[in-house]
Structures are given as C-alpha cells and as structure tokens.
Amino acid sequence: MASPIPCQRELFDIPADLAWLNCAYMSPMLRAALDHPGVRRKAHPWQVRPLDFFTESEEVRGLFAELVHAGANDVAIVPSASYGIETAARNLPAEPGQRILVLEEQFPSNVYPWRALAARSGAHIDTVPRPADDDWTGAVLATIGPDVAVAALPQNHWTDGGLLDLERIGAALREVGAALVVDATQSLGALPLDVRRVRPDFLAAAAYKWLLGPYSTGFLYVDPKHHDGEPLEHNWINRAASEDFSALVNYRDDYQPGARRFDMGERANFALMPQTAVALRQLLDWGVENIHATLTARNEAIAARARALGVATVSAERRAGHYLGLRFEGGIPAGLGDRLAARNVHVSFRGAAMRVTPHLYNNDTDIERFFDALQASL
Ligand SMILES: Cc1ncc(COP(=O)(O)O)c(C=O)c1O
Image (cartoon, rainbow, N blue to C red; front, side, top):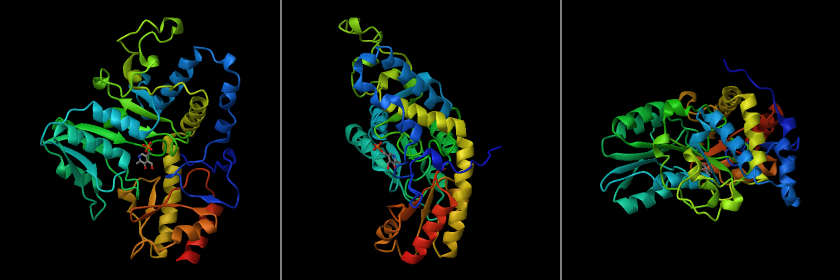
C-alpha cells in the first residue's frame, strides 16, 4: 500500500512566494545534491583516483537499476534521452515497407532517430493520431500488426499526461516480433515502471526532470538480447580491462560487460555522478509508489478545481497520476503563461495543454497561488 509523503520543500531551495509547478520542464535539484563535495572535486585532481572512474558510475548504475527493477548489468549511463534512443535506433532492424510507430505530437528526441532509421532502411513512420477519447493504449493496440518493426513510445504523453499501458502494448508487440523502445523521461521516478513486466528492448530517460538529477545525465536500460550491439561512440572506458590505465595502449576489441558498452564518453563525471546518486537514493527512500500516490492526490484536487472553472483535463483513468495538462475551450488564452509568471506561478505549455506538474516540494500555498493567478488571468 502506498502512503502519502508530507511536503518536502525544505530539501529544496525554492523561495516561499514562488510556485514551481513545472517538474515536466525541469525539477529543482536537492540541496543535498548541490552541497555534495563531488561538485568541487576537480579543484583537487590529485584526489581523483583511477578507481573513482568506476566506483561512482557503478553505484549510480545500480541505483537506477533498482528504480526500474533491472540488474545493473542492463543499464548504460548516457547524457540524454536522445542519446539513448539513437543507440536503440542504431541497433534495431527495420525492413523496407515496415512501420515504426510513434504518437502524434510525441517529443522530438523520440521521433528524429526513427525518421533517420526509416530513411536508412526504407521503413516508414506511422504516427498514431491523438484519440478523441484519450485512449492511447487502445489506439496503439489497434494499429499493431505483423508489419511493425518498432514502437517508440512514452509511458505518458509529454503534453498532457495521457497514459499508455506499456505492459499490454509490449505483449502485443512481442506477438508480432516487433521491438518496444520507451522514452520514460516524463514518468520515471514518479510513475512506477517495472522492466520485468513491460519488457522493453530499450528504455531511455533523461534525469533532469522526475529523476531530480542534474542536466546532461540520463540512463538507458538495454534488454540482454541487445548487449552485443554497437555503441554510438568508441571510447576507452567501455573497453575490457580499462581499469588498468597504464595498459590502455594495449587496444582491445572486447567491451566491459553487459550494457556498459553503451556508456557515453566521460561518464565518470565527478560532479554529476554523485549528484545523480543523491537524487536516486532520495527517490528510492521515498518510494516511487508513494511519490505517485502523493502527486496523484495533489493533481486530482487541482483537476477538480480547474473543472469548476470550466477547464478540462484528460480523465483520471486515462492520465498518469503525476502529470496534468489543462485544456481550455477555444485554446490557451494568449499571454496566459506570462501573466502567471508575473505572479510567480510557473507552468509550461506544450501543444494544446497547459502542463501543471507539481512535485513533493509543492505545498498548499503554491496551489492557492496558482488558482488566484489563474482566476485573475482568465
Ligand atoms: C518526453 C521527453 N523526452 C525527452 C526529453 C528530453 O530529451 P533530451 O534528453 O534528448 O534533451 C523531454 C524534455 O522535455 C521530454 O519531454
């Protein structure tokens, strides 16, 4: 049973009179991460030991693995979602005439790599149109057939939180021999995901939103059947025996085990890795189920009040609980974002939706500030 988590604002550096309702854009970092001595590590390079290039990355890899219920061996450290998805696109086959499924208005980092694969292979992009009833799962299931090579999908739509049941979709894709690639950037850390049940071929996530990490960090889960794939870059640390710095001149064709071959160059970032570890440990401590339950209750309350103002959302059953997109009849009023920002209320606008995405640092005062500003701005 998930239990609600009390407000955690004191762990962040957010002014009392500012409502940051915009985790979907970027989370603030934890004070504990910003205060980590690793941030100043390179002031004293004589304290950086060769072993440190490995131990911190392995710790972070293990923490991410725990979050998605994978083994550390199945996780690569990457700088961005796009890097992870490009790695997937370079390692999945597509034949002329086959289809690659994406959603209408999907985030571009999970579209461009597939366009490039389509151009290379003769496959084509099949864009699943936004369903009028917000049932993305039904819409994707209805289009899966034997000519699908890959479905590249999120766990929820980045504009308005529209939810996809990736377990059902994954099972249907496996039946036709198609691959599943997941961009979990807008869900992981706030919406439970178990790779043992979803069974994606690849799953990428940037860490600077719901994983509370620094910018330029991310992860790629790689199913073991792709562990012999081709990395995007050929860097020294991914090769076997790279722990022995003096022997690096003995070039090797073999790699570090598992998904480590897909790690980005300079993944042993002495500032970012410890900060990422602090964030992942905090998420695991809170528990993703508990985070999800807390944010779901918060968003349901916001959605109910918004409805009373005539503003719609995707219904609770078809929306990820942690993610809210508000829809205005007749479209988003011009200048609304600026009027809210002038009152220290920060949200974002993507497609036809105004994203209101609180996290555990938000309190009731933020929500009152939001509704006061919204009512004054409509
Ligand atoms: C769904 C989704 N994926 C990925 C990203 C970030 O992509 P990248 O890490 O390639 O910059 C975002 C950022 O808004 C996003 O909304």
